[in-house]
Length: 368
Image 1 (spheres, helix red, strand yellow):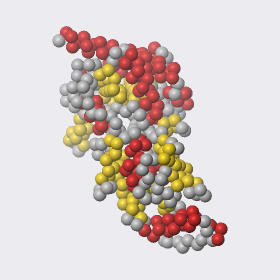
Image 2 (cartoon, helix red, strand yellow):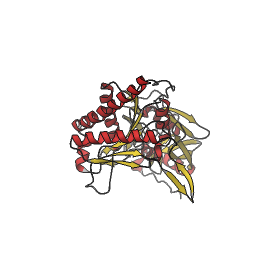
Image 3 (cartoon, rainbow, N blue to C red):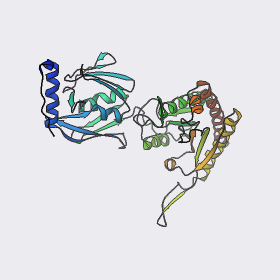
Image 4 (spheres, helix red, strand yellow):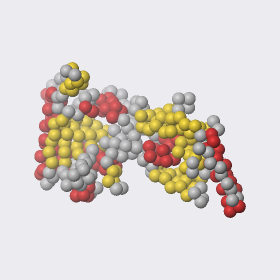
């Protein structure tokens, strides 16, 4: 329902009139559609409601921040909008096309000014399609007719022979981008996962192991993209890192998850199953997990190895396991998971066990 806007003498400033006109035009002309944001293999990252105002497309900053785990601050009296996204700060003003990123003027103004829609800041579609990818450290491909933005990660897909002949471990820090995983206060699982991955990768490289990370920064990454990246390297181990969480705050300790042979039945028929001829691969992963668990117990950590049906591993061509070194939901574990000494300790254990696996694989290769 439209509401009339009455301007009193106290707000007859140029800025107030501009704001009122923009608000009124948005209310009169606002329509809606959808701007879809996809990853490079077609997985949906976000679906943003699209407002068309005078033939121009806008998205609410509320929706944008929610989808990409960004923060914003809007000050109505000054009409200033500040958005924190990725590692950048963006300063915009209602009614203006130019804006600042980290206190520096962006090279190209927006084609249309920032507006208000029902008292909420709205950004031109071009901000999402051209500026946002840069802020996230990604490349963007935008289909203006279909209103689809595809975000391409900066991780190149290497040719199949890139790591052939080398013992290679792919470390996959879970979550990323708008998917923060478990959040406890200001602590986000995606950040903890990445830090653990960095420590373990450094320890492994120190022992001569070839290491590749699926993501080296905070970017959205689909599961399919992670799997294809690992398979393209013909790597020897896929090492996924997550943190655990529970509604029972007392639960703590590490968990190592390993896939097992499984079949999923529906109405008497097998509709899904683990890959055939995978028993040896699964056994290798289990033996590796038990050695890591033994090493953890040696430094005083409690936990256990679980053999579970892990559907996400079904397309992998190498042994794989998931390491959850602690519960973010537990106060004591949360302290440990942000302690560099603790991370170095678990990194030493993991690196020692995997380097032994490297020697076993190399030995078999030489004997053949």
